[in-house]
Image 1 (tube, rainbow, N blue to C red):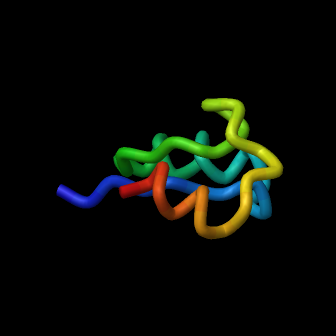
Image 2: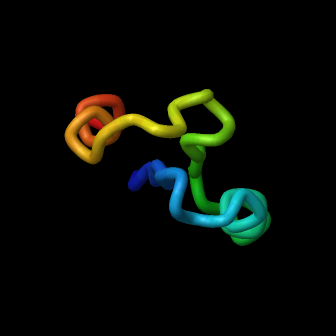
Amino acid sequence: MIRLYLDEDVRRKAAAALRLKGYDVISAHEVQKQSLSDYQQLEYAV
C-alpha cells in the first residue's frame, strides 16, 4: 500500500479529497509540521 504525506505547499483540502477517493494520506498541516525544511519533511515522511 502506498501512503502519501503532503507538505505544507499542498492545500489542506487536498488530503481530505484524496481520502474520499480511498488514499491513505496525511498532510503537514494535520501533524503540525509546517515550516520545516524540505529535508526535515522528507525525514518525517520516511
